[in-house]
Every structure is written in C-alpha cells, then in structure tokens.
Length: 306
Image 1 (cartoon, rainbow, N blue to C red):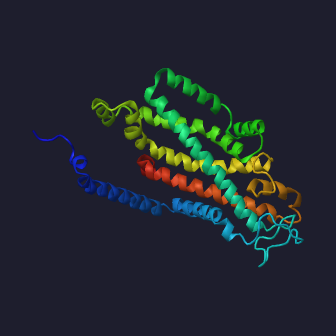
Image 2: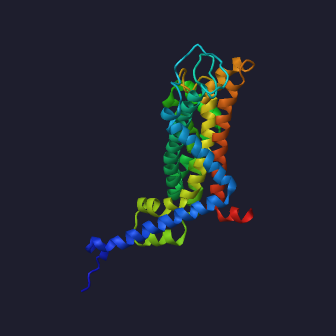
Image 3: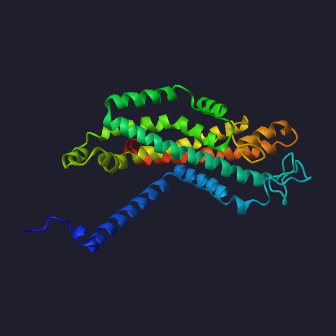
C-alpha cells in the first residue's frame, strides 16, 4: 500500500524546493509592494520623511555634535557653524537635543503601538471568531475605553500612575487597544465565513489553528495601515504629555518638553520652538502620508476610486 506520508516529511530534502518557492514568492510580493509605493509620490515622500526621522533617532549618539545634557556659557546662541541649530537657555546644543528627543518619541510611539497591536489583535480575534457572550463582554469593555478621547484617557492614566516613560507607554497603548480590537473584529467577522475557513474546519483544524493560520494572515493589511496612522498620533500624544510635564522628565530631551521650555524665550529666540515643532510636523506628516499610501495599495477599492 502506498504511503500517505507527504514527501516533505518522509524526506526533509524534498521540502526544500517548496520552501524556496515560498521565499521567492515573498520576495516578489515585496518588490511589487515597493513598485506600488514608488508610483504614489505622497507615499514615497512619507516613507522618506519617516525613514529620515527613524535614522536620526537610531544614529543619534553618532550624529549628535555634542552631549545633549552638557551645559555651556553660550546660552541662546544663534545657529552657526559650531552649533548648527543654536543653543537653549542652558547652553545645551539644540541639534543634539533634537536628535535624542527623536529617540524618546520613537521609542514611546513604536513600543506603545506594538503593545496595542498585540493586545488589540488578540481581543479582536477572540471576539470576532468566538462571538457570543465573550464577544459582548470584550466589546463592552472596549466601548468603555472608546468613550474617552484618546488624549484624555492617556492623560488620566499618566496622572494616576505617575509621570514616567513606562507609564507613558502604557497610557498610549491602553488608548489604542480599542481601535485595533474594533478593526480586527470587523475583519474577522467578514473572513470567518469564507470557504477556505470552512474547508479548514471541515478538515479537523481547531479554533486556535484556524484563527492563527487562516484568519490572522488575512487581517494583517488593515492592522499595518492602522499602525502607521497610530504611530503619528502616538508621537503627538507623547509630545503633548511631555509638554504638560507628564511625559519624559527633564533634563532628558523630548520634543514636547523642548516646546514647553521654549515658551518663555520665544521673543528672544523663536528657533527654540521652531526646531522641535518642525520635527514633530515632519514625523507626523511622514507617517500619515505613508499610511495613506499603504491604505490605497492594500485596498483595491480605494485605489480604483482615485
């Protein structure tokens, strides 16, 4: 009797061509995505701006011309060849503080969004796939969180737990979990009745396998798009809370705290406010433009309308 064991299991070497084919398909998909991004000038501009901000944040220790905490007698110095963006009221190099402030903003934004994606995706998958009582309980909890404006909820959490970097990340993540939960749940409710899911269930696959192997890969597109938009708003929330003294604490540099410190010196040196304000604008604009382009690429209906 012929063996029913797949060739790739009976002989591991037989599975190599299939794995190589999958790898080539992934590479072709990435190249196709890159071609789509290049065709959309706004998406490409957003990618360039976002990449520039991330590069500055990652390479801040090597790009910064001075220690961002080091004070000097040259207070409120104008931009020059020595200090490219001038100095603040304590004589600290503004460019160095701007670069290290980007590290704080990117760390908070990416960590908070990643945590929200993980928890929100799990909640949305369970609620949308299992439905019933669990769905009602989870969605009512999500509704309670969504009843509060994002900034107000983050402000309440930080004010309650205290001003620190972990609490700031927790506050922003908690504010974004309901958004991802709703996005994933809606996609799951649409996908769970498709034929390929029913076929997997008929072949004996369990709920966990169906959710992780069949449904989750098909809801990644809206998750990725939503993540790019939330990155931009997370940067603004971090700046707003730091501006109010509830985010990154001085003397550590942060775009929001730099704006707050610049209020008293705007008439003497407006560049103190222009530099961090421009950095926030560039970062938010970059992620928004890139997210808008990804939405058009990953949703053919929107691409056809434009």
